[in-house]
Length: 113
Ligand code: HEC
Image 1 (cartoon, rainbow, N blue to C red):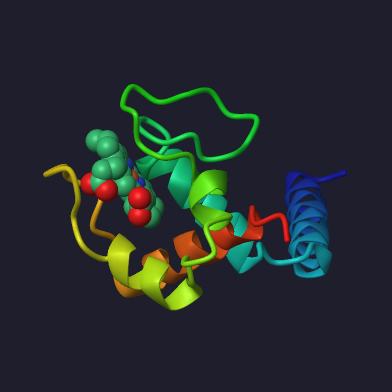
Image 2: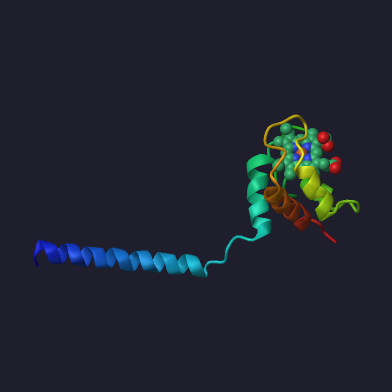
């Protein structure tokens, strides 16, 4: 086989693999808002808060996310608003609206009833 043909085969094979990967991605479910919120919580909140009932305690006595979720006064709206404001004078605590909304959705997913 000439070098040119080898190259053509190589490119065709690479393209086929690429196409398969793209199709697989398309079939895989996009991450839900709850999952997005959980990822953000791991990134920005887990140092201080217990972000899941099974998670380890952070280094402050910040209330656990499932405890916040189970308070009758907690609503999606007031959580989303709160999360947009910095608290404890810390960087990374005031999140932009879309992230705050995902975080609030995640926290409320921990509500038991
Ligand atoms: C530096 C530590 C720290 C980080 C990081 C942090 N928090 Fe907090 N958070 C606290 C502490 C301590 C409290 C309790 C005192 C207060 O309300 O200010 C609190 C309170 C809260 C409350 C209110 C609970 C209540 O009693 O009403 C919410 C909601 C909250 N945090 C969400 C978050 C979210 C979401 C993140 C991540 C984006 C986050 N926190 C990151 C320390 C932290």
